[in-house]
Image (cartoon, rainbow over all chains, first blue to last red; front, side, top):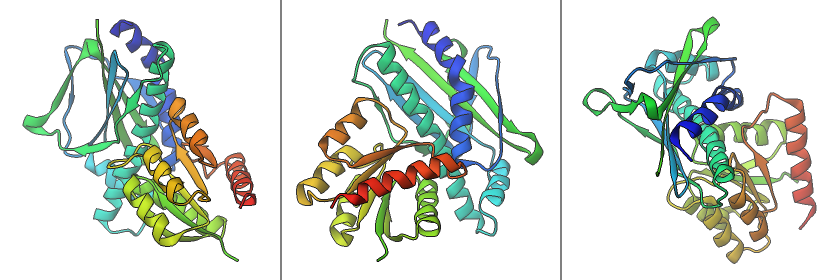
Length: 166
Length: 128
């Protein structure tokens, strides 16, 4: 399957998938919209959650990033009264859970599209991709969506790099 | 008598959500929680709970391998898989002996979801 086909297919379902996952962990409703990419999407965050879903011929590396201010506000909404550090850890863990749901569904989609049972996902990881370590995704291989909850000034970004073997 | 549960998930947030649900809604005693398959095996061995819930995608030892090890040692163990995964791996776990599964995301805010979760637990606990 060509990358462009896979990308379009996934892109068509991504907002619904992410919002479904977010409903399981966040107390508020989010809206999602695609970020138009020219050249590169950049993952530049000290606390980026990433996860790989892959089949023998395709791989989808997903990222969920959230500004620290948003994480703190979200932490206060989800877990009021908790110490800041604990609150941040739990928000990160909630973000990882969203990514895990999305990656699981993407792995399932790959298995259906490629008629294989040999798909895998890695556990979600939290990494520092800031500054020199920023991870860049070519726009023609990538998807990027912003999710916002305007009433509470909360936002996060889902990005993915999609690659297939020729 | 209170039922006991061990919760294993690499997401601390999910573990917290499940812990609250089992304690506050179902009246279970949460004996322990872990975040990988190795801990699942050792915590089951240590606590022998009425139920252990496990995610499948976990570091160190994944849920499938942990399930195999637990059931080798304790064939009567009641293992409930809680996962976002669909497909052959989940079916494999059920074939290997997991009692049932719950699909993520966990919508504890939805009455239907909670009722289904409770019904699943009742079915599992009926069988010794």
